[in-house]
Length: 210
Image: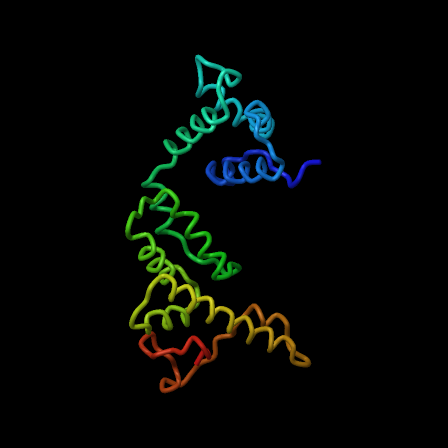
């Protein structure tokens, strides 16, 4: 009996490293120790395009001649060579939260884009900075900038808390009798008096959204 399922390799939708890690869990769950069986599983989940790439990479040898570790290393070297640091940095710097994306999903996407950035020691500082830049809600910007000490961990907690409060308020409005459900996804802009308007410099308590 086989435990769990392993998908076909798709390098356009996921990373090679993530696939290999997933495959290791699959082998462990199914007590697969034999190299020949490991290689058979590895080759069977390659699509024709990925298999052709690997076949060309190992010429003049064939995939039959190599161990699973050698095949994994050949594809890993190919994937790392094609992952441009400049392109990765461009995509990371241009990343902005979309209107349908939660804070947690946005942070996960930022981390995904940072894989080949080569941050070194500045990894968490850069994540913090571009979390602040990329979030969609102005209220989150103001709450983050009001913090005197701001690490990535703190900025993530603040952003997720403010985001949750906004969702809770929207759901509360939607649950009221006769509420217009379309208003949950749309905040109408009403004119405010100057004295009541928040500015980016006003302190904001993300714990209570005031």
